[in-house]
Amino acid sequence: MSKKIIILHDTFLYKWWWERLIMMMGKALQSDIASAFFSAGSFDLRSEWFTGKMIPLSTEIFKKWLRHFKLKLTFTYKTKVLQNYDVVIFSGDCISAVRNCKRSTKKIYYCHTPPRYIYDLHDIYLQKVPFFLRPIFKVFCFVFKKMYERDISRMDLVLTNSQNTSDRIKSFLWVDSYILYPPVDSKVFQFLSQQDYYLSFARLSDAKRVDMIVQAFMQMPEKKLVVIYWENDPQRAKVFDIARWYKNITFITLPENKGFTEYIGNCIATLYIPIDEDFWMSPLESMSAGKPVIWVNDGWLKETIIDGQTGYLLPKKIRISDIIDAVTTLTPDMALDMRQACEEQAQRFGIDAFQEQLEEYT
Image 1 (tube, rainbow, N blue to C red):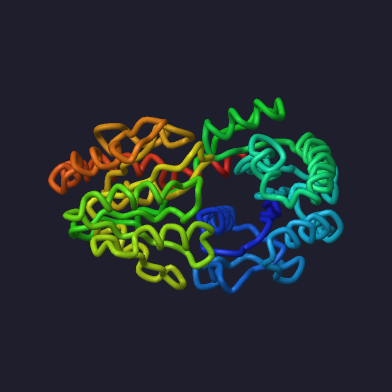
Image 2: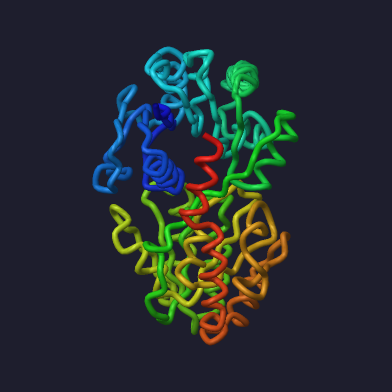
């Protein structure tokens, strides 16, 4: 008799890479998927050929802090359904549900990162909290930290998305984890042509440093930059303001992600320079489309991009002049020469290899 498998993911809120990852995992394992909610703003799993059960545990809620507390209660008290499964895969901030599994259930945690508001970025999050609420924030973080460490200790296996995140898990939790790189779908992200623009498709937030990319292109009026953004990006107003008079910089938002693969498939190269990131699909999607990546030597990126073959490396302490030098050096002709190496490198992170490894773990 085949094993009954369910994936519990915290929320299907947007069309981001982790929602796409869970969808791919569900199809690969022919599992069911449970989540606090399936938002209309996220993927339509049925239109993506997912055939398992979709189990919503609560109702939609979009206010960030309120959502966080509601989800804690939902996963702690409303996940008895997990007792019907032989294997449960946890994804995102939902592992408090582990207490509702049967003792015999195989419990696997796919850890995208230990909660950063508790661990390495605690002080940064604390500074964003109004002064009079900081003592309450500290208390909640203390309680959530104890809960998280107790819950992760109940897992039979911890998987993660990169060596960078695996090192972070080991550093903070003293837990060993196994790397399962998320896959890129080479049938979706393909080379189409080479038009006359470079592309940034990271969120407009401080950690992604898109503002630095924009400032670099402000000094290169002969070079075109297309910036794909989301309406709720926290740095949107700031970035728009600094670039408003520059005709070589175009900002595009894509409802339902329509046209996303076309922008990647037609650009010269992409730029991606986040600060100490855990994992993000952007560089793999770029390389799958035969487009080299201008990237920074920080976080997980050095695990996937090959300097001089599939991208152009920038120093960790990046300056705007470094970005200008990279764009000037990575000409359209050089980008075309890198196409084959990019596509071959992306194949290492393809769906077939991912599915084979995933089935071994479950």
